[in-house]
Image (cartoon, rainbow, N blue to C red):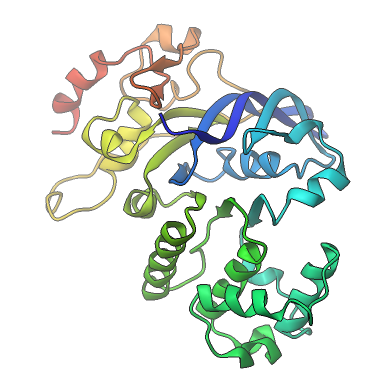
Amino acid sequence: MDDAAIVVKNLNVGYLSDYGIIKVLRNVSIDIPESKITGIAGESGSGKSTLATTVMGFVNPPMFVEDGTVIVDGKYDILSMSKDELNKIRGKVISYVPQAAQNSLNPIRKIKETFIDILKSKGMDYYANTDIVHRALEDVGLTDRQVLDMYPFQLSGGMKQRVVIAISLLLSPKILIMDEPTTGLDVVVQYEILKLLKKIQKEKDLTLVIISHDIAMLFEISDYIGVMYGGQIVEYGKYNTLLEEAYHPYTYLLLSSIPTVRSRGRKLPRIPGDFEGFIRYPKGCVFSSRCPFARPECRENLPETVAYDKFGFYKCSRYPEWRNEVKKAYE
C-alpha cells in the first residue's frame, strides 16, 4: 500500500448557527496516498470544501472540530498545532488553492506584489528569491516574465489560474489541495489546466488532491476517487475499480448519469429528491431517502464501513444485492 500523505480519522466538524450546532462532517476517515492524484467528488453541500479547509487547519468560528485527527506528511497533527506552527508548514509542506481562486488576486495590485507578500509572510525577500518566482511561473507555462508587472484584469481566466497555481507551488510543497480548479473556465482552458496539473504532479512527485462536483473530470485525471454525500465519504478506491464496479448506489448513479456514446437514445438514470439536510439528518444510511434500492432497514440502521482492498471501502449494507436490481431498473 502507498504511504499516506494525509490521514484523516473519525473527523466530525460542525458550524454554530441560529439553528444551533449543525454537524457537517460525520465520522470521516480517509487515507490520501502520497505521490498520487486523489479526487474528492460529490454534489454541492456534501462537505467537500469543509473537509479541505479542516485538513489545512483553517478552522475558525463559526466552524469547529468536535473530534477526530488529521495527520499530514506523517508527522504534523494539524488540529493540535498553533497558528504560528501552521503558518510554517503552509506553502512549504502543504498548500491550498480555494474555490474561485482567480478572484483571490488583488485587482489593483500587480502580480509581482502578490509574490512579494507571499515571500514576506515566510520571512523571505522577493528580490533575493526571484529565481524561485521565475521557476514557479515557468512550471505553469508562463515563460514571459512581463506577467509579473501586469494586473489580474490584464490576464485571461486561464492565465490567472496558472498564476494561482504558481503561487501555491512557489515554496515546493509536497501536498497540494485544489478546490474546484476548473470552475468558471471554458472547456478548452479546462483541458489545458488539467493537462498542466498532471504534468506538474508527475514531474514534482506531488500529492495532489482535487475537489470537484464534476465527477467525469475527476475520473479523467485521478488515481483514486473519494465520493462524498451528506458529510460522509460513502465510497473510496482506485478510479478504475469504481468505474468497473461501483459498490455504492450513489457512485453508480453519478457515473450512470454521465452521457456517453453508448447512452445515446437511452434514458439516463437520475437521483430522485434532495438531500434531507444537516438539520434533519437521516437516522440510518445518509443516502437512504434518495436511493432507489433502499429498504426500510436502510433508513433505520447505519451501514458499516466495508473494506474491499487495502485502500478501497464503501458504506452500503445492501451490496451486492442492489447490483442485482440494477438491470431491472436501468439496463
